[in-house]
Length: 261
Ligand code: BTN
Image (cartoon, rainbow, N blue to C red; front, side):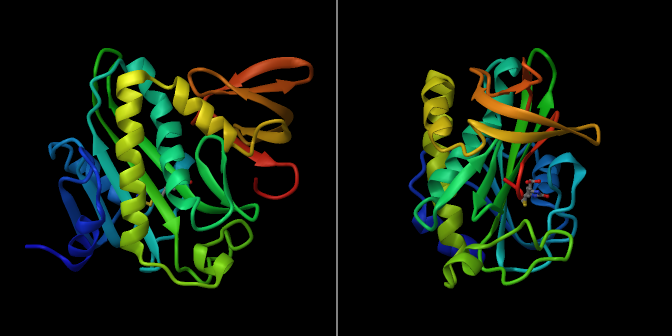
């Protein structure tokens, strides 16, 4: 049986591969958790929820999901590539979300994949992988976009923003979802066929973390650093006390010297 969300979303899709199956639930614990439970669904299946009761962010953080003002969406993919190459999917998805949202406001990407508007977080991405050193079973690319939110919980109110807060307008959530899926369909195919090189050029052009003083937060310790570049595998090359070091996504958080980004 079709639902209201999918009925609106499907006509806006221009994809070859992503979103041929849509699973919409009014409420679930977490669309990433749902996608992992339903890992036998075909590659490209999209899971969307109106609300999440246990929305998850990176590093085990909570993702505010208790109302229907935001987009909560996860895509299940099963890429047939070497597991060594898959960690950069998080940058590929980050660029897709950036491309989808750039028409709405003046945004940037904070490495590895936060979407930043007015020095605050507009969207967050959580990519989770399952497999071993030889073979990837599946990858779940989850995104939360603050669309029509007018307020945030106390813990995040200073670092989160929404399209509504910034532009004063409300938006159709299916439209945002469709833009993301259309962009990801293109970039995912490019990543599988040609690798990361060209995608990385576009990513770097829009990455606001580079050529800046940053704080690297690892194991509850903050270290001052200078962000130099993104490596060919998608790591962040920083200089700390005259020494260069590559930070791998998932290993540390990056903050601006003043404010979140
Ligand atoms: C971050 O910490 O920046 C990542 C946030 C990711 C949130 C999204 S909302 C849809 C999907 N389901 C989850 O539980 N998390 C992701």
